[in-house]
Image 1 (cartoon, rainbow, N blue to C red):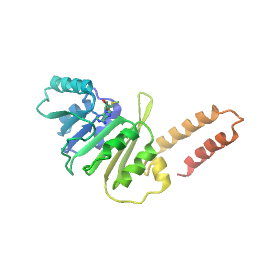
Image 2: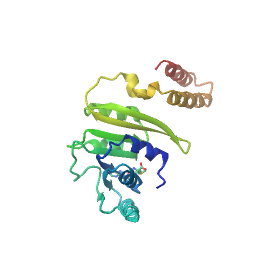
Image 3: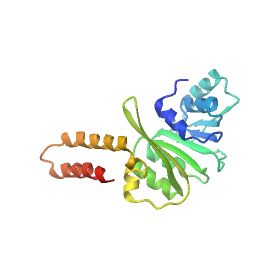
Image 4: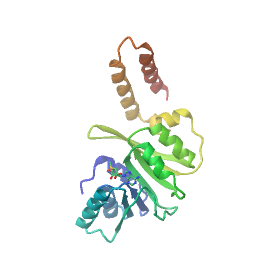
Length: 210
Ligand SMILES: C[S@@+](CC[C@H](N)C(=O)[O-])C[C@H]1O[C@@H](n2cnc3c(N)ncnc32)[C@H](O)[C@@H]1O
């Protein structure tokens, strides 16, 4: 099947043979791909009835109805989460993701791709007792995405780790992207807005030393 580059990269972080809980599965393409290629068992969930109906139709098309469970639910409500499950949450904003993670039982492995507020996401998930195991930065159809794998553990992180990512801050492609993003913003700020321009100049400088 033709999985987007973004979801293919999410799939690379999933543990082989783990049971996957794909929260907000939408079309369930990830679940279909993981079942066919990675031998994962999947629970595909969504809060939206129409999305889940489309997911069910796609799963049926690939004759995987016996292998992929579907569930209409808000986040992890009524899902019996086990320690070894991989919880995947991708394509939502950080606030929605943090609401979903605000539950009694989480697994040891979370794979998350948020649309915004990545610094807040890192800080809050680390507070829940996780460390940042992997970080992927990619462009898919010219849009930048970050995917983070968190695993249970404790580690002290610096502010710079939360802001840029303990792994991504060493990633040349990511740093190039940030420099070009901040330079474009700087070039569009009026010369009169001295302090805002200074903020972006400092950010561009900071990227050199992270
Ligand atoms: C943009 S789609 C992302 C689909 C897929 N995960 C991906 O990365 O391509 C977001 C999906 O999350 C679902 N969603 C939003 N909030 C949710 C929640 N609290 N619980 C479960 N699903 C949710 C939406 O209905 C939608 O289908």
